[in-house]
Image (cartoon, rainbow, N blue to C red):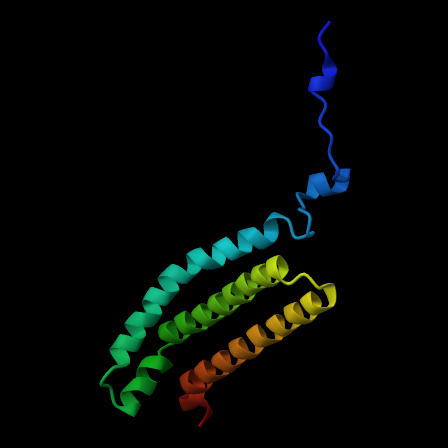
Length: 138
């Protein structure tokens, strides 16, 4: 008769945690997956951003406004800001969770990180929308 004890696995995780795929921090694969997806989406968005900035080099103010006011360019810039700000927030959260050991300080740092990312993102989104929709609003 075979010994079934060798097949039995001891797990400290609850059945619900095993089903949800949650790790020790409770984030599980979702945090990892979103961070990887923003990393992948940043590649074409940053390339497009560099091309747009290069196209603006040597342009007059009116030409630059005309380029940024184009709907495709404005959408690319908006998507780049959203993706990069979210990627930055997630990356810093990983660093904070790994290296800040005091629980209170960790919570404050994560909150500050979230506020910082939102402030930077909203400021960039506002600037892009103001420039791109400026002709319509004036």
